[in-house]
Image 1 (cartoon, each protein chain N blue to C red):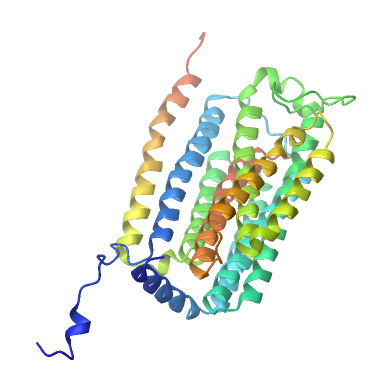
Image 2 (image 1 turned 135 degrees about the horizontal axis):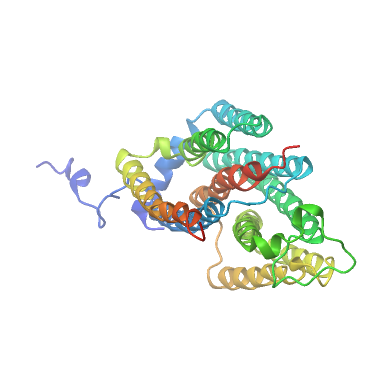
Length: 265
Length: 111
């Protein structure tokens, strides 16, 4: 063996990756597979309740369907902007990457705000859970009179499934904010927390749910303090996988929960 | 990251650069069109089972486009593709074991 060929044949310390990609990406795929089982279980529970309940309500007027369709368009557009952010990071274009990430976050926040508005409207109309405080001065809409008593599975599975998804989108926005802006995002996140907490009435579930943002700010501060780093293209790609996953899950929630329960006049 | 991980990440980033931007816009457009079709079908007074079948078919197609193009699974090595997707599909399909019980509940109660 000549000395000239020797460097090429020295084995590296580590074996080559079994899946042809880097560990962070494989780790995120494993997490997403486990998370898809969580959403799978919730979607199956919803479907089980629907099959076994003959008088399943179909309360969603065209206003709700239009709202949910716009939410879907927001998520699909956010996936496009996310993939453009990943591409910009692969090209080493930091400015473009940050702008596309911010656009993705804007679409995600649009989704959460529209979803929050939808939830508030449904709760005011009488679709509620026992744990939610009763909003003052609202009459139950005809669609929801007795629904909580006769078909309690409807509200439980609806709020459970869409609430879990909303939590994922919210945490996805925080994740992208940290990747795009790092420490600078923490004060912005605290402003969001205060706005969500103080801007919602005390009987709204979002009044208490807003504390998720405070918790996220604390966890992110600890992570950034323990391991400060500049996020590279692999981090952006891994964050993108998570974001596309929340979009993917909504592609099943939207037809199953909204379209199959649309009120056809 | 370790040196070999950096090398892989660099190779993956290099591959990303070669994916045309136009194909992402095509996929996005196809997803929006399929969503519009779903909403249109909702108001066509179809039988619920038939509508559910069409909606789930479209949702699976949309999921395949998102996983394949946006999540880049189409461009991964085949070992990665098959192991992740096959195990996920099997696990989710196994949950269907509960559905016969949901149908059984319908026939319970006083006759």
